[in-house]
Amino acid sequence: MRDEDKADEQLLSELRQYREEYNKFAYIVSHDLRTPLINLKGFTAELRSAVERVCSALQPLLPQLDDEQRSTVTTAIEADIPEALGFIEFSVARVDEFMNAVLRLSRLSRRELRFQPVDMEALVHEVLETLSGEIKQRRVKIAVPSPLPEIVADWASMSEVLQILLRNAVLYLDPDRPGEIVITGKRCSGETVFSVRDNGRGIAESDLHKIFEPFRRGGKQDVPGEGMGLVYAQTLIRHHGGRIECTSEPGVGTEFTFTVSDHLAEGDSHAQ
Image (cartoon, rainbow, N blue to C red; front, side, top):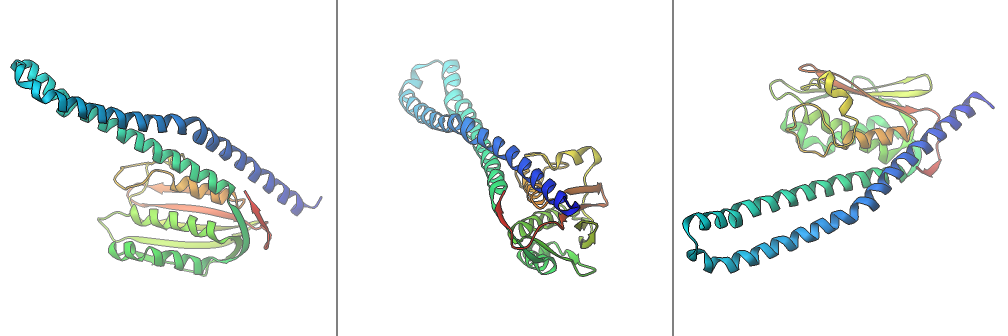
C-alpha cells in the first residue's frame, strides 16, 4: 500500500472513531436525560400553580394568625417558595441549554461533508463582513498580511470554524487598548496551517486546558456563551483530519492555530 493510501486509511479510521465517541455521548444525553428533564419542567410548573392556589386560599386566614405566625407564612409564600421555584426553573433551563448544545455537537459529527476547493481568503473576508458591526464598534484592526492558501474542505465547516475563532477574538479583546487581529495561513508537509492571533486579554496557563472542554471557559466569565464554541470548532477540524491548538499570555494576547489535511479529495461527499 502506498504511503498516501495509508495516510488516507488512517485519516478515515480517526474520523470514524471521533464520530462514534460523539454519537455515543449524544445518545446518552438525548435518551437518558431528556425524559427526566421534561418531567422536572412539568412538575415544577404544576408546583408553582399549586402554590399560587394555596396562597390565594390563605390570604383570608392571615388576619386570624398572631404576628409571628403571619410573618412566617407571609415570608414563605411571598419570598421563600417563589425564590426556590425560580432557582429550580433557572437550573432546568440551563440543563436544557447544555443538552441542546450536546445534541448540536452530535449533529455536527454526523453532518454530511462536501469537500471542494475553498478560497480561504475570500471566506475570511465574508466572515469578517458578518462581524463588521462588532468590529467597527470595538474599532478592531484586522490584518491578513499575505494571501491565504486555497484548500480542499467542506465550505460550511470552514465558515463556522472561522466565525467561532474570529468572534471570540473580537469579544475577548482588551477594552483598554486598540484591538488587533492577524490572520495567516501557510502550507506545510501534508497539511495547511491557519492562525488567528489577537492582542486581547489572554488566557492564564492554568485555564488553557479548559477551553476545549464542553461547558468550560477560562478566565473572567463576563462574555455571554455556553462554553461550546471551541468544542464545535475542534469537532469540525477533526473531521478534516486536522487539529486545533491555542497559545496565550494574559495581557498580551491569544493565538489559535488549526490545520486541514491535504489528503481530503475534491468531490468526496460523506457523512461523518
